[in-house]
Image (tube, rainbow, N blue to C red; front, side, top):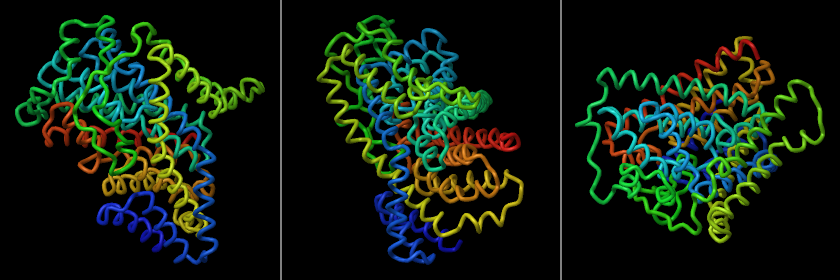
Length: 483
């Protein structure tokens, strides 16, 4: 137990104090734990390598397919068009709920940095049409929806990693994640809106004026009523190089607030928005269908094959590629696929070495020791995994890294107590949302893109996402009584 704690603490210190890459720090922590716990040199190395390979076999292709699909959706302009459609359908006053729920449930495959850069100009425009608390409400909606989607909903990279690490069927992770994320996001946004309405937001101290050159051209188009083809062509993209994985990989590049207008290859309005989103939605529905049929013990070889997560996401990837070629041309789709492969490498390596640490912890027998400390009460382990993930996130600033590490520490306890692994996965994801602060790219992106001061961002991002974290674990614990 002492060596496990020391290994986790060493990983945090190496990342924070000595600026060691998180992937390298996790391998060093795994090696330390294996050697000090008596596994020996050969078994320690084998366990680290096996743990990496096992989780890659579970989720490697899934993460790659999800990232590539998200890259193509971004390139086709589907995301900003979707946000525009939400504004038209729900109106600006309901936008915090509509935008946060859409981001959390349907757009998890988009890198959070990219998603924020695309969505923020439209969120700013909606905020300007609200009352003086509009900026607070829209910034909170972006933060809560984006962060919850990463770790609670498939195919968010955090959710995929947790499912693979804990052996949770992806269909089950999708269904339970959906059941959790909808009330979590809605309640958290409602709580924050209540606080803002009671005077917790001071526009003079919590907002800052946008620099004159920082206002995207899209703001002007939307204010002038540009909902037609010309407005759809003005898709915002991250200036310069595409951003890294942001909150998923600590130390990733800061994208800044610059937004440039992409030069369209073919008119994006030629491709209807539902058609652009259909392949990804089809993939998620297939995965959910497979989970439902499995629970109902209905077996159909064709449906079982198509509902296999790898095949379902492959269908989504191929479909998005075909629709994307029709929308923006082959050359642009090929370029964004190449970039997507480069960007997914960081996430894959981090996920893999997180599996190495979890495998080492399991091999040392810590799970048996922890099992002796817990009784038949399943609330205590769930609270512990939430707390561990929360503390790690406060220290390291990475949602995915803290969730994977916390789940790996508590995963061996699940078989001993009969806890459904999906609850541990969701509890780790919920804990990793606690206290998003200055160590996170998301924090600084929301500050610059939404025109907030640091004080204001602490309210909308840090407090807002922390409220979602607490709401999520309060919703998860009752599930332990019925699963």
